[in-house]
Image (cartoon, rainbow, N blue to C red):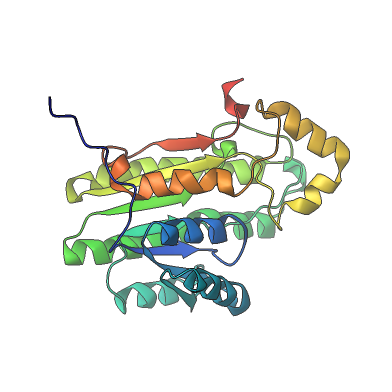
Length: 254
């Protein structure tokens, strides 16, 4: 009997790019891909975080490069991809949130969240795909969404709007790009404890409400998202496109 071979989760020889990679989820995902053999380019608007992260990854004997880029600047994004070989893996992680009641949202709040969470993600993906198509290569696009792209939440109307948009965008990408062998998926985490979110959990009542909704009974950690990214980046997910990998501890199951 010949047994089927388990597809590899290794990423040796692959080039990966992670936006918003200086801290939190982005940093963790860059470390995860590098740990599986990818050469990772960490991208952010500020230098200090990504430079230190790339140095730490390199100290493990893995390949990482830091590159400053404001993903909200369309012309800079175009140049970035035009000047480099195609990236086999893109993680669209840069994003923001302005929690507030729907009636408190102003135009500047709307523009800040939608421009980074949706517009920038769209055109970063477009630029990455243009290089893949030019070189005739397949690829994996991974967009970091949220459980709030599948449900609603109080004071999250603007954030939900952006993350639901990201889900639809990724599904349409998957249909447009399937023939070229380019896959598009999202990862939709629950509340993940990071330097950005930690201040929210200083409110004991808010933290208790969140943990009550997460059926596994704890806040998410960046490590909970790392395996999902490796899976979607690797040949182990070769037939997975146009879907969302929800890492929410059961929040959306209720």
